[in-house]
Length: 79
Image (cartoon, rainbow, N blue to C red; front, side, top):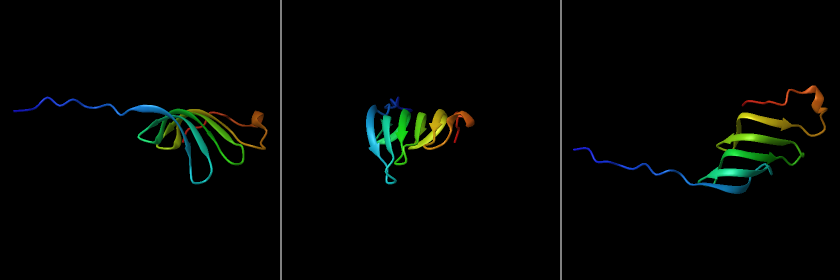
């Protein structure tokens, strides 16, 4: 017969992850991978604050580019 299997939930934790390009992610992660809500700071001081999936901006968030007039940009970025 069929066995009743329980699905284990992946443990979500708060992490600070440094990417190879020098960007730093601070936020939720699963198994050491940036996933969930967090912030990314790039070496040029650009930032992203929003949802991340597999280490990349995903869904709704706000991207602020360094050295760019923010009033001229649509800040809601979806990748």
